[in-house]
Image 1 (cartoon, rainbow, N blue to C red):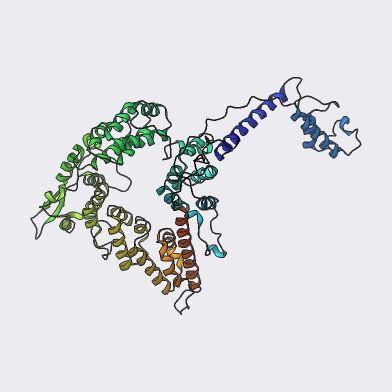
Image 2: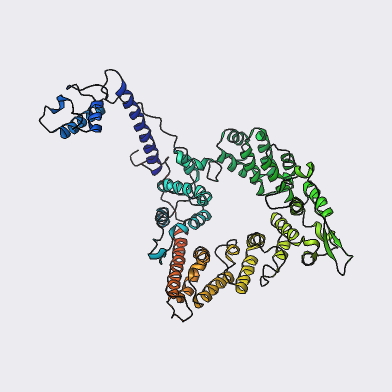
Length: 595
């Protein structure tokens, strides 16, 4: 029997047990039945025994009939209770067996290699490295932090999850939301099938991406049926598949039920349009600006503003241009800002939120939203034909510089404009507080995400070389994994400098954790030299060298484990199967020997 079939049998067994239990309860209360309300040959009922047990045999003597054996009262009471228990079980009425669930759908992806399956079982066991004295992590790798990376790597090879690990995989995804996209994709259609049988896994049926047996997108009738009747997760997946084949067909499908969808569902469907967003989506998004849900209206406005040639982007550009202009009356050109004095109905329809958050002035709040939604291409023309490199260096009157630059940063992120992002980041050697753009590391990380991975890694590496690791944590989080060579070397060199300075490694625990997950595993051999305990200097913190040695040993062992995981996940060479052999030993449609 396959693992999937065994799961089905366990589900049927559990259902049958519950049915028998219900039948037993009915039997207990049925007149004349063999239940607990009916006295035995000694005239003793189960209720009599319960009362004696609760009050104690000293205070409530058991019925005389059960004391005839000559045993003391407590022993006689237990004997009678055992007799009643057997008598009650013998009186159970047979229950009708529940219907077996439909067989799990076939998963045609390639089977997972056995070493990788064993590794997955180990990772799913959630055996984190035990903390030592004082909360020290020791030198063993933290397996829980490697599970997301394992799932991501397995996804690149299009493996299917072994049926035997599906329950543990769904339990892990239930406990950790960061695992859900990778776990449910890896679980595939069988994971979704299994999630329907257990209420604890219903999260898999509520919009998280997961494998679903989709019809051919060219089969209009099957697509329409699934869209009308499918679970929400199936509908989201179906919409993505149809959209990949053609935006017009996806919009037509979405529009067919738009007016009857719940607000939260409309919001998630609309959010799915971010992938492959184009001018074809503009008419649908313009209609969504009048939606009855404020969140839907705001999302539609945000998506339209990401289309520089959309009508909404043009309207926002016209509004923003009236607020920002070039002033040539002084010694040199400066930027003059006149924030809006009101937020009219048309502005609100285009996504401008009228009420600012606590601590923000209304006019600055409205200005930021207008500039953020305006196409960045409007500013060179508006500000004297200057390129972005010159625009961000212009002085801004009346203290509006930070508000204006922050809005330009948000616009660059929204419009994925690498040129403006590069300019607003400034040179990596410049202190963030004195450069253009914003000093917020969260916003700078978003700007970095608009750059190509190689340029992003080089910029962060140069930033670390100039400013160290203390402010680089958020910037490292947006760099592609594994880190490129320049970035990996910069991080290791900065950690080595911190070690030689004699400080404790705890100040860099976040960066060290990122290094365990993001450094190229080939760096392990170069890091081996840092695992030795250095001689302590007079200026070093007591015991710091030992702590650093331990941290680097853990880093090296983690990198080597990651290298092993990659080897285990590498697909084996293609082999030719013997004629007549089963193609999928875990497929429930494959008959067992003798079946």
